[in-house]
Length: 414
Image (cartoon, rainbow, N blue to C red):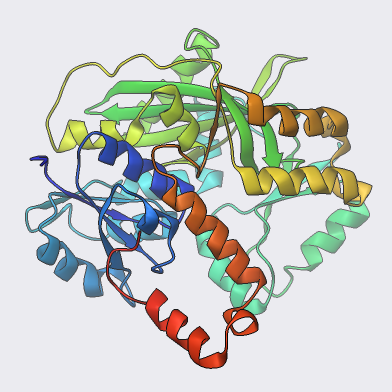
């Protein structure tokens, strides 16, 4: 039986939270997962020592009581929304350490406009922000502070689009008119060619204790978005860019995990800074599969007080997010051509070959499926089927009601 102090992990509904749980669990740390639903994929993990349903309302209304009840030594969180709330709460709740970013640094990295302005001051290349009509196309519309604008968009009945590529003046005017009723407008930025290149750092007491880098091979949507297929790169590549990224994090006083994300054009060899993710990021399962365990690093530094160097990680490891990767493939073959960015150099048949051959690739890993922990994969599949085929279509009304009630239990799922 483990003697390591337990952790409360807030946000086990996504592959990111699942990855952190698996890292900690494999090292023998008891993980008490908090999810939005008993159907959370993390609740089905063998490494979920306890499952707790997320409380209603702000974190401060219910989290301190849960901390006291569980006796957790530390709290970690995944989503930006939760990190924002925790930044306004004490760094400790009783004996439990809140291992999340503090407000000043978090506010800076969440504000893309401020982040890029500071980067320009340090001589780091960034997209151009257009205040008038652009002279070069395409351009990209992005929100300076996505977390701030999302509730306003929802209230106005306008869908949130993380990044929208616009190809001409007429399309730009139409896109901006969509937000005429709001008191905020998206940034209009120059388009950066190439592919996503992420540098991940763990910062502790002003030092980098763990570094990892990867490149995005595929994204969803296909012209740019969430990484769906990525691979680890050797630590020796792009060392000058690593040093500049490190200096940037030092400038803002960042502590903990962060990803500094660039677009890199292999033709021109130019880097353009996109943003800083001041949290555990979407492609974390790749880093973990390659041996760069950021969740464990977070725990062992703060909870165990370890100072030993993190082990080396492996390059050439690949990971894919299977469902959006499949959606990407379908869109490339069946979607309207106007939806696909012509600058992205997309290759349909190459994508199909990668999708098929990936099943036989010994270096391929998956965001959700793991041979030592298959429960979350089957839970994910069940959730998908459930969303397509409602219970009342499969079972009589009384049986469907019974199953629905069972799914709401607060006991550990798995």
